[in-house]
Length: 476
Ligand SMILES: *[C@@H]1O[C@H](CO)[C@@H](O)[C@H](O)[C@H]1NC(C)=O
Ligand SMILES: *[C@@H]1O[C@H](CO)[C@@H](O)[C@H](O)[C@H]1NC(C)=O
Ligand SMILES: *[C@@H]1O[C@H](CO)[C@@H](O)[C@H](O)[C@H]1NC(C)=O
Ligand SMILES: *[C@@H]1O[C@H](CO)[C@@H](O)[C@H](O)[C@H]1NC(C)=O
Image (cartoon, rainbow, N blue to C red; front, top):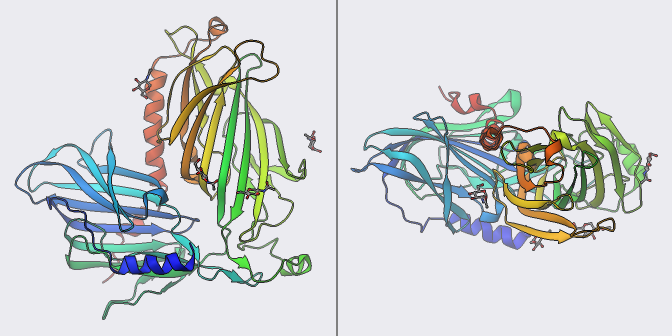
């Protein structure tokens, strides 16, 4: 974000009053929000208790999420009470105004007047964290800033709220504090700061700007583009993956040129800092990984190692703020671990591939994932627990092809984060030649995978820890 857009952003925040009108069917009796800034993006998790104050049953409720639509990596709404077996609710973006996204959340059935529900809204928002200063000396502590809101973000009136911030070491509020507002109560152990709970009448559609800084001596990995290409070969029972990363570090930049002598003396290669010295790629668990290679523009990079089953890459140079490093990575798995014949549908297969593998803490601006089916295979369908921007089916010829070439299925996603690593894309295809040789597989697999998708979505949310901080009483 450039300074001008920050200034405009601030003006917007200060004057942000929603023009988006909804029926005030609900009242929020308790609003508890947790912002987790431990990683290079914001995890925003809100639990609300809402009461139907209308005279009619209501089957929908609206939620507000800060940021532009393009900043949202994930939005999940879960009904916690009343309890259901399928608590993930469907929600739809209905408006984006003044830097806020408005969601309509569909409840599983109409809630009677006076009844209460408890909802968990989990959002992952990118582009909300920036460095406090653009440039600094090598080895200086790094301070980051977040612009957000303190009072309840809601289109309904709220009676009680609390805001907790997790991972904000050396937290410092930069926005003007309200007259007489108590200091946040820090929880020392894990750099958690809690405002509230406060009780009162918090107006609907009233958003109160809140700007803070904190210390974060870690890189801010940002992948501009990631290409993931999977090659399916039944013939050699192999699933090959090649990934191409255009990686950068959004951390604070060096204020003077890079000096290797200063770098060696600073010991930045060995301590926590905003410099990226190595890249950790967690590999899929419980499956064999073979033939790992790692190359960059210069050629084969030999400094990679397996550490507890993860791949540890050592780039040729330390990646400082604003620097780029593009590299290619590849490996191979046994196809039988990922592709299964469908029972009762001769020659049909379900292939399950991971949305993401690499980097422990990263934002992915563009992800292009392609699956090259074996020659002669026909694409049937694909599912993902996550919405793709587009899916393209085309054919590609490689020099070994004699027939019709490979069918290539390409998905494009934007704004993913490493936490979505557990999610899979399932490609359903027909490949009749080998069908008879494969072991039949249960039809229930499809349904199972769909359920696994939901399970992972819930897991993503559960990872936005820790719950106990949210409910801990913060004032005497
Ligand atoms: C990401 O993809 C979109 C659409 O394909 C493209 O317009 C945009 O320039 C890409 N971003 C980067 C950083 O390459
Ligand atoms: C690496 O990727 C970036 C885009 O993210 C691009 O601007 C740059 O030219 C690439 N560098 C090389 C050496 O390909
Ligand atoms: C890269 O280096 C490794 C280790 O020296 C070697 O085993 C591998 O064959 C090389 N790969 C290429 C493509 O040169
Ligand atoms: C593809 O899958 C979706 C559900 O994921 C289903 O609604 C659709 O009917 C399927 N299409 C075909 C052609 O099977």
